[in-house]
Length: 365
Image (cartoon, rainbow, N blue to C red):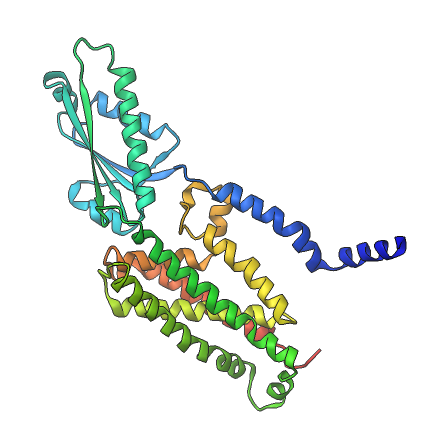
């Protein structure tokens, strides 16, 4: 019995996959959940339009920016450029101080601040508005309490793109992305591995087809089926959940097709480096599911995460596709605003296809 137990320890320690499952996955999951799952606001980019530029507005601005919750993003010359800034996705909120702010506080005992938020992500919009309002209220309580007469600084909030803060505006783009990413990648990740297990890979290898043709033959059926799946999801989102499509439907379908090709190419790459369907499925689940949910910005804001995870999110394709879907469906933007994200996904698709062809072995081991 003692020798058998020692043998089993040797067997586990020599198997890299077992060690990864035993020790690697728990550590990575704890780190991801610990750092990524945060509902707080940190370093959210905002813009400030100060028509008054007096001592009080500068003091409020300083208090907002020194809180640790916000950083100053793009400059906005006037209210006419607010939507343009939001279209580029560079800021989460714009704070507007009315003209003669300090003078109105002194004479009328009341002044107002307008808070305009990008509500395409309703949770984040609600948080940044509440944080800003709380900071303004704190300033009023701390610094204006010694005045002879009470004064009031009121905050008026306006939510762009989603005035009623419907949660469907956040969940539908994320669900579309996760379903297309996981289903298509996981289905194709086992395709070539299945051929190896069943022994039918020999037939493919002795055929006149080249690796590119074999991989294309594996991908094309899944592209068509996944595209039908994407159309079904969009129809359900529009007619059942009431999710609007303010932009071009053809552009949205084209971007979905591009993302499907990228996800399938990633699945094929996993399949080429896997010796069995079980290994391919494990790699797909481990490498795709948690990062897709946690590091894509679907639920948790990326700016809340540590710098290392923020850099890691740049190589996550779902991050860029969620931006594309929200831009088209919610903001009604065209290709001129999402060409960078489109180019990133297209580059990833080409990269994984090339890597799959290189890793494809024309001889059985």
